[in-house]
Length: 397
Ligand SMILES: *Cc1c(COP(=O)(O)O)cnc(C)c1O
Image (cartoon, rainbow, N blue to C red; front, side, top):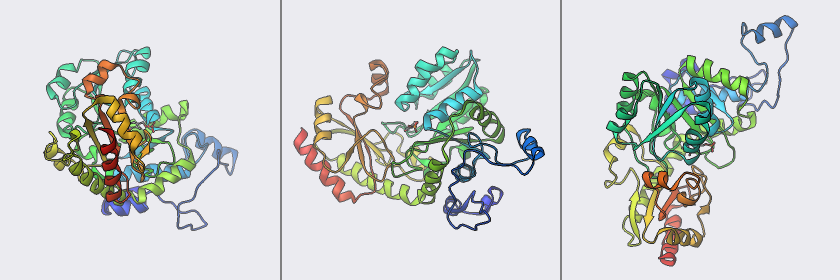
């Protein structure tokens, strides 16, 4: 099944089969090519490959058959023309910026991005002359007012981390295109199983494959999906030269993860919905943030734009950091870790971990309070997760 024929197949078929190219061994499961370089029949063939006149493998910094299967499969799922895999999600964000921006350019990004992305935009890119302004994710007038003649990217995560705010991708795509900008969506929380930003008008999709694409907390990786020119040539060209490439082993883990993505995401959504609903009735809990709840300000938009509400739930406790840390320390089943998108449920205190390195003002502006807890709801029995939170809540406040 080549990428050209993916249109005729449904999502789950693509997730299992897209991109596979069997070797002469006729393997059923995709092969793992642990080979840093590839050989040529003749000197002339080597020259043709290096000159780009002949397709084929050269060197695994930029061409590897296992990585290519992962890339083609993810492109098919996101409905993009091209995908490049990167060493991490952050490498995907960096490669996109380095390939498509130059000194003097400007980014408008949503507040409450993944903390390291905020750091990259606020602390690293300015040294290369690229400035970023942050706006509240659902304040469309602020997005518009912040765009300048030199703005190149509108960048967001929807739903946002950790508050699960949802922005209208179609609306922001129209705004981006009216101003000669690209709309870039970090689709980490939904994955293509729940949301396909390119079909809603976004130009590029960023992934941290580390999260749901792996789904079992094993490998670090990332990807960018979009059109052939920007992704297949410009971002690929940067990667080939600068080197933050995905390892074939990690690509192999991720491409097997994609096979079960839809099934896993449905189960994450079901468990998260049940816990969010239960949490909102607990007296110690001030507020629950989950797009599946009717009380969520963008509940309706999430229902239109996504085919599920996702696996991330956050909630605020009365009693600030002290209560939050006590709750976390009293859990027995949930893992205390900053990772998300794992089969194992995780619990995190964003203000002191994932968002600890951004300034207190930025945190405040993003609504990441000291009493906020983030759950990445895993695939355990939801009754066990609820019981664990119930005893921890009773002990903490
Ligand atoms: C984790 C994460 C990233 C960064 O990905 P890494 O693989 O950790 O480099 C980017 N965006 C979001 C939304 C994330 O959750």
